[in-house]
Image (cartoon, rainbow, N blue to C red; front, top):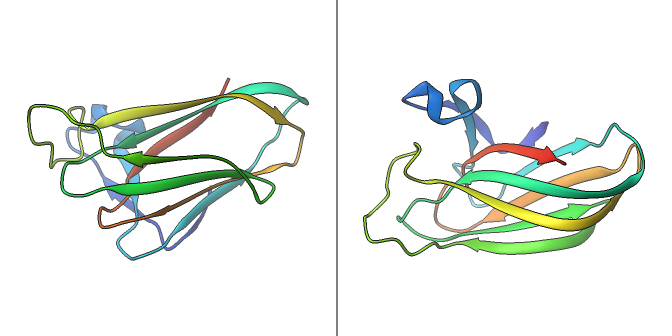
Length: 123
């Protein structure tokens, strides 16, 4: 991924994130993007992120600068989740996305939380 504003952080315990790492946005706005390298077709995009209960992050996902989804990281659970670990790991699934080789997939978050991302999966 190409990261603008995001920084790589260690996640503990390491097994709660991909390779023990994640990316967080320590400022008002950040961008994480990459080029899809595969066959054209209809796909599902899964975004694994950490939904802490210290505020609300707003995420926008776009393909070739066209927004295809947006959501708030504001799950309501009984316990307060402040750590970046398995207790706050959450998945957003977006279905029916047409992709072609070379398309840019981009995530733009904002909000008071650090919009921590683990991975993006194309299925």
